Length: 171
Image (cartoon, rainbow, N blue to C red):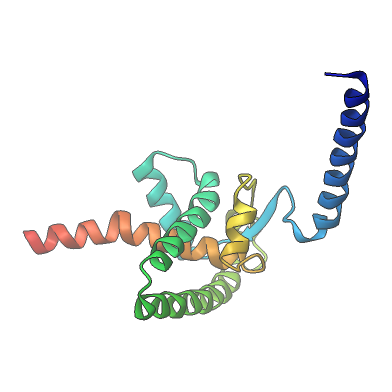
């Protein structure tokens, strides 16, 4: 490599790095913060506890699991290219967002001013690096609570409720 080529390459690398830094600073307000606060409903907290026993995992990991699961299901359904299935999925998304709001109102009424209950239902989590992108793809960056609620509900249905129903039918 010639000295002239080295001189041209080093400024190009510095320029590219600086450009990348500037671009990431521009995107800053659109990105989620490092720690995300979310609210649990009473039924959601109960399901998380059961799921935690099932997978032997800590409930603080469930927001990431829930968002990832909704994203996985969304991607899988969209790959089917079945308009009816996609429409049903979108309808369910809308319904679950509404269900969350209704359950949250009931939970907040139950919590009242109890500091202990507030700590139980108001949580924070550290998203994995890909969670921001998944929420964007799901168009749920402003509906993190709803996405977590829906993901917990889907995991609970598919890992606990449906197998139990299947066993009851078989027996």
